[in-house]
Amino acid sequence: MSSNALQNTIVLLIGFAGTGKYTIGRELCERTGARLVDNHLINNPIFQVVNADGVTPLPAGVWDKVKEIRATVYQAISELSPPEMGFVFTMELRQSNPLDLLAFQDLELLAVARQSRFVPIRLICGVEELCRRVVDPERVAMLKEISPELARKKMAEDSVLNVPHPNQRTLDVTKRSASGSVDAILDEVSSIALVSNGS
Image (cartoon, rainbow, N blue to C red; front, side, top):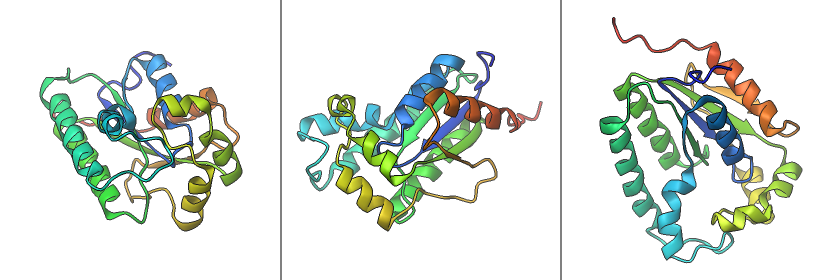
C-alpha cells in the first residue's frame, strides 16, 4: 500500500478497551505515514495526575478535563496541520453513552472542516479473546484499563457505538492479527472516495 493511502483522511478506530485499537493504529500509521492520535495520548496527562491504575474507577470530573485537551488537539489539527496529512484516531465509544456519540460527531466535524475523508471503523472482538488481551502487561504502563471483569461486564451490557455513517465499516478482529486487520482496513479505505474540494 502506498505511503499516501491515508492522505487527507481521518480514520477512527472504535472498540472496547483491549480490542487492539492502539496496536492496529500504530501499524496503520507505520505503513501509511499517517499520524496516530491514540485516546491515551489525550487521556493520560489527566490520568497521570489522578493516579489512574486501570482498575479503580476514575474520579468525577476527569472526562471534562480530557474533553478540554481533545478540543485543543482538534483545534491544532484544524489550524496548523498540513492539509494532506492523514490521521488515525482511537476511541472507546459505547452505544449507551450519549457523550460518546457527541465525541464521534466532534471528530466528524473536524473531518468536514479539513475537507478530509472520514472513515469510522468499528473493531469487534469476542469476549474471551477480549478478556485475554485486556490484561496484557504493556497496557499497565500506558494507564489503560486492565480488568477482564469490567471488559466482560461492558460487553454483556453494551455495544460498540454504531452510527449510520456511509463510510462506517465493522471489522471482527477476534482471530485477525494486527497486520491482517490493517490490510482489511486499507482495503476498505481504498474503496471510499476522497472528499471533493470543488476544484
